[in-house]
Length: 101
Image (cartoon, rainbow, N blue to C red; front, side, top):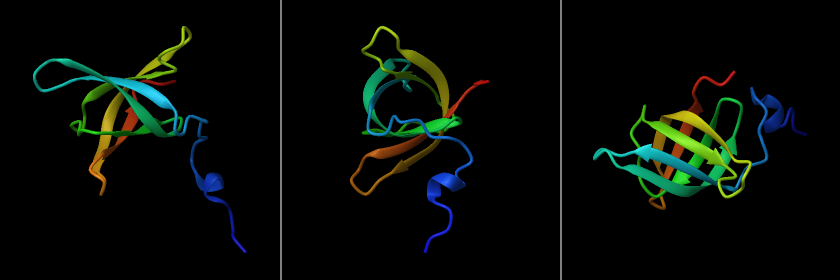
């Protein structure tokens, strides 16, 4: 018999965006703006977890757009908290929402 489920133990509610495509944009080391559609792994009140084929530096500002191809999209500024390369070569990024109230 199990105790509380993992979702019960989490500090903040999750939104149903798992496996959805979101759009992220950031400025690379050469000053160019890079925009990519990426898979959303997890979303909470505090941030977003995405998978990407390249690393982004910790502390870098990243703009994330939910529903980027619809007229009622929402965009948010985030900061890279974590960037971990996975065994398959892609990177798992933890992005923290900035000034969300």
